[in-house]
Each structure stands twice: as structure tokens, then as C-alpha cells.
Image (cartoon, rainbow, N blue to C red; front, side, top):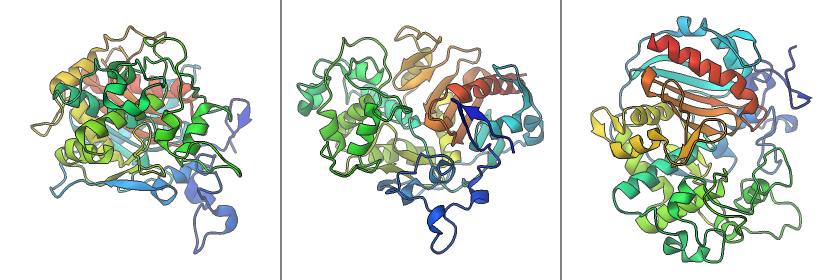
Length: 411
């Protein structure tokens, strides 16, 4: 059995870790050694994660995002599965592999490729099925950032205002003098760490406060998202890019306060119903009922692709202007802020690649990816359950994979 090694530790490969083979949550009731529970703190453990990311609603509280009463929007199909599976790529370590093998090596749960709005490739693995929502993790940020940018375009929000203008509760915190734009572009100085591989990192304290990780015996920390945000203090100056998920939750709180609509309701009103989504989505909620804008959204693969196609087409889908074109053009330009060290820039919770396809990306831990390439007329929606949260290992394969696919479809 092939046992790939990441970070000095060996893991089951993409085939051997298939949850159907391992028998997670099978039986009535499932055997004790095959159960995945919130209390067991194994939701993000590997290989359990290969089942849990397609079943998050069964593990943590959530609120529905209704698709509305209309018929789902229709995708035409132009089948290119055989051709794409055989596409050869060379990863950054120099390995040559087929496209379909790359999917297994990145622990892909589902992938859908659109070219000129047509489905040319769609595959599911492990526990994921077409009707099942999968955890988006930080891809949620790009949904939230798009909504916030649309509210700015509608003059409902002003990104020049400081956060306490909208949320007086955050006076005296790190966001005392931060503007909404600085929050949207992750340009705040916060005394907060976000390192998933370190047990003592603040990201895990944040998860416990929000009820997304069990609280240890004797826990006396914050018990809700808003309580936790109110404890974060400033470190350094605002104006330099630092990726911190709590910024998105502040942004989502501002949207809910000003609009009078929850994050789920905004998704329903501004995206799910206008896009003609096939299925309802859902959003995780904390013990106080606050909805998690930084990483709580779960959607189906096809609805994920609908969002990407709308962004590729400058806010339009099926002849309907869903999001102002100016919002999408502003994100795609990526001129603000200055480019990051890796050549990317970050705008309104989107990663701007500045690559040969003019692509923008929504990214989430464990391999979630929405890659939107206007110059290749391509959208790739992918869900995954990689053993590591960081994208560093997976990107050795994923980025050459996107480049090879974009060049093939553009030819």
C-alpha cells in the first residue's frame, strides 16, 4: 500500500482512505470504533475527515440557506471526461502524472469543470454525492466578501468607515481604528495566530468559543463568537496583509447588523435564489446563534460551480445580473493591495493570482478550491479532504493541474 508522507508523517493514500472502504458511520448503530462524533473531537482528524466534510450538518448546529421556489438553472453538458482524465501534468517536484491520478493524490472528494458555461467534467469520490453539501471552510470568506462588496456598491455599507461605526461593541478591541476595507482585505494588525498545525494557536481557541470544537473539562473561556471577537487586541499597525479568519466574522457581523438580514438570509436573497441553485446550503451557527461567515458554509458541488460561473461572467448568470459587474471587476483587477510575496494579491476576501488566465481563487483548508479563469473561459470547483489543513503540499499538484487544464481548454 502506498503511504504518502506529509510533514514527516505517513498517511493512507487517496484510495485506501476512501470512507466507504473504511466503513465510517456504517451500521445501526455504527460500531464504536467506526463512529465520528463532535464530542470525540475527530471531525478534522484523518482519515475521519474524508467522511465528515460531507456530513457536517450531522455533527454541528447549522441554519439552512433556502434555494427558493424557482426551478434550478440548467447546465448544458459537453463531455470531455476521457480527454481530461488522460491529461498529463508535471507537479512542482517534477513528477509526471495523469489528471485523474492527481485527483487521488490531492484527496479530492468532488470536482466539476465548466468551460464556456458547459459541464465538461464532473466526478465524485469517497462520501460525497451530487446532492450532498460539502464543507467549504474558508471559501465561505469569498461568498461573504462578495456580499459585502455588493452592499458597498448598493450604498448600504461604506468601506471607509471604521468598524465601531457599525459595531460599537468592538470599541477598545483590535478593530477600534480599522476600516471596513482593511477588514475586507485582511489588512489589520491583530494579536491573534492562525496556525492549524499548532495546538496552542488562537485558531483553536476561536473554534472552542464558537462551539466548533469540544471544550475541555474546566473550560472558562469565551462561549460565543462575539465574546471571542471582543477579546482580541491590536498588535502592530493596520495596513499590512495578514490572513486572519476573525476579520471575516467581523465583516459578516457588520453586514447582519446593517442589513437586518443574517448571513444565511443574505446568501439566500442575493445568491441562492437568483443563481437558481439546485439544493439548499447550510451555515454553522455558534452557541449564541451567530452564523460563521469565515468558514461555516456547506454547499453542493454544482451550486459551488454556479457561484464561480457567475463571477467569471462579471456577476451575470443566465441573463440575470446577480452581483454588480463593478464588484467583480474590482476583485479581478487585484490592484489593491500591492502584490503579496507569492505574486498574488487579496481583495474582498478573494485571492487574485495574476496568472496567465487572469484567475481569481476562493480557497479553504484541506483542499477546497474555486478557480475562476476568465481568459480560459473556465471554472473549476473542487472539494477535498486532504490530511493537512495547509494548501502548501496540495498546491504542488493543484496549481500545475489548473494550468494544464486551462491551456487545454483554451487551445
